[in-house]
Amino acid sequence: MSHKSIKLVSGIQRRWIVNVLAVSLLLVLSVMTALAIVVSNYYYTALMSSLESRASMYASFVSKNYLSNYDTYTRNINTIASDFEDKDKMELQFITSAGRLQVSASIAASGLTVDTPDVKNALQTGEPRSYIGANINTGERVMAVSAPICLQNGSAVGAVRCVTSLERADTRILQFVGWGALVSVLFLAVMLSANFLFIRGILIPMQEINKVAKRIAEGGYGARIEKSYRDEMGELVDNINHMSGEIRAAERMKSDFISSVSHELRTPLTAISGWGETLLSTDMNDPGEMRKGVRVMLKETSRLAKMVEELLDFTRIEGGRLTLNVEPFDLAPELEEIAYLHMDALKREGITLTYSQPDQMPEVSGDRARLKQVFVNILDNAAKHGGGGKRIDAALDYDEAWVTITVRDYGQGIPESELPHVKYMFYKGSAASRGSGIGLAVSDEIVRVHGGELLIESAEGEGTTVTVRLPRAEETERIE
Image (cartoon, rainbow, N blue to C red):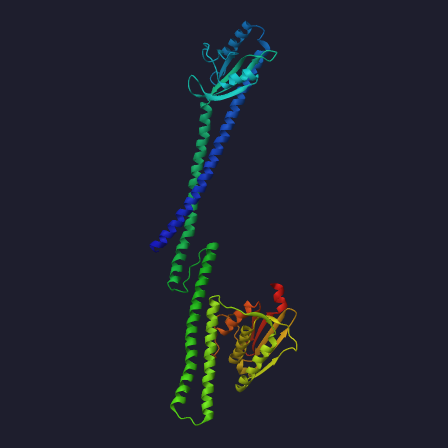
């Protein structure tokens, strides 16, 4: 494979991996953030609920039982603090109404002032309040809940405060997040490996497709790719193989066309040139012989003009420049004129042309000259390829929606294998009679742009029937 091909493949692979990695990282970061928030909320909510339950329980118990006098209150809160069993998990404190630390289960009170929001708000509102922040003494992160100790009239005389370190909770949260990060890394590794294998499975056949496409671009028409897949890649291979075959067939057909046209041009030119030299170089006293020569020259000139017009029509169709002068008109007199003009010419060749049409015909909407050209082409083909039957029948008819032109010859017919291809540009088949191979294709295109269809039926040894169906003028207006 060329350096350019390798670079192209690397670029596709890099873009694929970068895009997948970016989406995956965004997804993982979102999941990790959500996991951290959920786990943190879970631990903090559970811990705060436990602290609030303990603080409220002690505050309620003291409020109901030990507020008869100050000595009883002081003695009993000291007892509660000294008997507190969960000193390793949390700290139990009793705060005065002035916010000073009166008794603590873990540290010496020594008149410390506790001015955190939970204490102030609990004393002011008479409801439990929480706080998350730094311990003023150690600087570690703590969680605290203060519940007011209230008299019967609702006034707060102090508060019970439960305080615990968040170090253990934060460690658990980090552990969960760490495990989540590890799982995410493993997920990314597996996903990137799978994507790498997947993209490799696409790039390998793409390399082969790229090589064959390059060969086709360099003129290697007909080159094929071995099909190894049954999925969309296999379908792409089928399409490229089909395209390569079609290009090869088209090139062969064009080569045959050039050869055929060269011969077709040479024949009339030779006749014109020969008779011209004869008329110039000899004293021709025989008017009949002179008229014969002029007649041959005119006939061959007309033949050349028709070939040139077909070539021009071909280039217009190829370039999408086939234009129509559309108008409603009666097709019957146009076809009748063409039929009677052909009758004398065909009669001289021993071919009988019969033509029929109804007395009244609906109009069609189209290009008068182009549709006459179609009829002339069909008659000429019938004479050229089916003239051996010595008879051609042409008819014009109509029904509720269509105007129909039918031309039938009684010649050798078209082989069944060639019938699907006779309307293709440049196709000439195995017939012995010669021609450019584009007249019928041009006619088919003209009929198609008029909204009609050109149908061909044939049987070997029985002749060929060509049918042209054109929409009636009122049907065309209804569709538009």
